[in-house]
Length: 197
Image 1 (cartoon, rainbow, N blue to C red):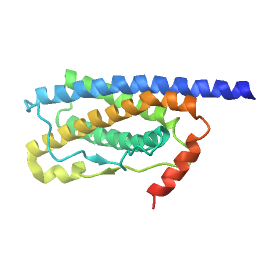
Image 2 (image 1 turned 180 degrees about the vertical axis):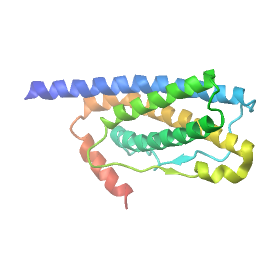
Image 3 (image 1 turned 90 degrees about the vertical axis):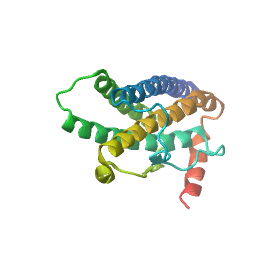
Image 4 (image 1 turned 180 degrees about the horizontal axis):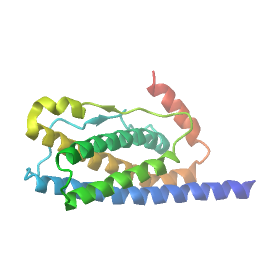
């Protein structure tokens, strides 16, 4: 029994390490994607104001890494949905145009899907969180072409931010699993209960 427990613990740490590497790679590619979009649209390099489109419960220090990953997973899920909205809108207007930006966009979309599948294996069963989105694509119709571009920049800024947060959190997960592999689910249940009140 002890051998199986150790093997399971080692496997989970290994999976967390691989997921962390995937998140780091995706974070770098999201930065590149944002830069490519700004260059293609001749937009300034300064961040667009208005805060992040995706909002989640605060990642306070009292939360375990497993809780944080559950919350960040919800944020990444909304980021993928927003990116799909961007792709649908852009492809409808520029369906025949190929570019480095569009190729990188596809890479980011596919890798984000892989990261979601990978982080899902680290979630605690039965305790899922929901992220909220402040401004949807439908609300940009009245803002014109420039307003739509600014919204797309904000989507890409969210991708950079939330993949970075996920990467940073995942880096510490193998160490936590090694120290307390059996207490994470209990801590998560308590934390989830408090946040839902």
